[in-house]
Image (cartoon, rainbow, N blue to C red; front, side):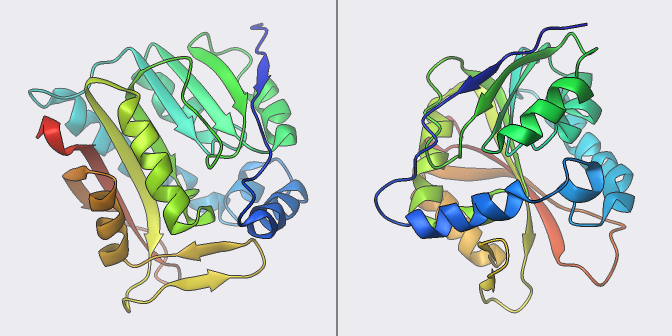
Length: 235
């Protein structure tokens, strides 16, 4: 059994948007640390989700000039669903960053027999500084809607500065189809249209390397897109 330790980073919100982030933290603090809790009652889509992501990672790894297989980071990791079923299948070491400590505690149990799990960081992405490691792949799924536009740009810039040579950031997110931003007051998050996400990537000096739509999801939920991003100066 691996002794997975949790590294607590500075969890305090910036002076601005404190209420916005605290509301999200309160919401997730009340969610059961299970697959169904992580997926908002849609645990049934987990296999389909992982299958779509698996295909993307395979494409990235076999491309000339694609990422290495050394180290990956799972952002907004929850209990480690993506780490367990996707990232540790491909990468030698996978770190996790998650703001909710009770999810990480559950993650220690969920991932205890996986020797490829690295460090578990307890931090909101708006505060995460990427100080310890550099990464071949940084995976961000169903979490960036919790960041304000300004903090998302800042986060993506910090992430891009923490990539190894040929490293890639993957963003997998719900997108709206009508071009508008939709706000969820319950969990203090937004769902952005693809056009706004692409603007934000540009503001962070990131270019889209690959783009795919997730297939075979229920028709009554948002469309989900995957964007593989590289710094503009590496294109």
